[in-house]
Length: 296
Image (cartoon, rainbow, N blue to C red):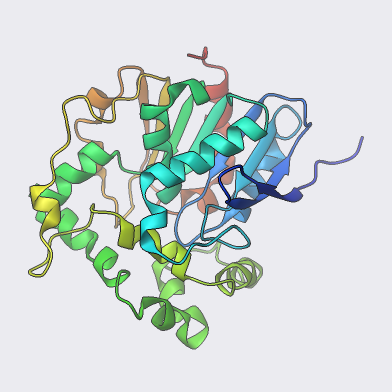
């Protein structure tokens, strides 16, 4: 029997966006869709996908703006409506509703919106260290600790941020990862290959979002309100959270159950924001656990 391998392909969507994708597993198997965050790329899911590829078809797209995916220059092209349209187009092109959507960080921001607005596109949801928009808004408005932890978001909106991040072999980006043993030279080289495609698209996610800490020059977030019931996800939803995440602390789990009528939270005390790199076997285990759960 041949070992699973990663397939790569470019998928042109009807609305003019092309997503470069990575995939593993039989094309006719039930599908799992995996979405990465910042400053990552689809390759971060390779180890997870290969561990699941004997049972499921796993597809990990590079989100718009990343690697070889389409990268519109204007921040307005990175608002939730457009990002959700990308995922709906990918899901339809790959065969219709997916069994499970797994998402981390900014991929999770897309997934929260997709699951709340278009629940027919998926059957289960698994979120990895990605704050629910209702909870994140509450913390940005009222929790000084979260405002301090998220201050980097405003820095990433600077017009010169992409140039500064690229300096000295991407020194500022490496510091975002901390000193994890997983950040080997081989992994760093894979990141370099992604980042050399350009950083404007990834930074436009921050520029397009109103969910940033208030500053003396921009306190828009303090006036932002969401309608009752906004973001409620009624699909079976598992939230996997590395509790040592310094940018997204555990307070973002407080009250989350109210947004998830059919939810479960798994807290991982020793894991950071980069849990997919740190503990891929645990991520696989939790995916297997959630795939065994009855679908919506």
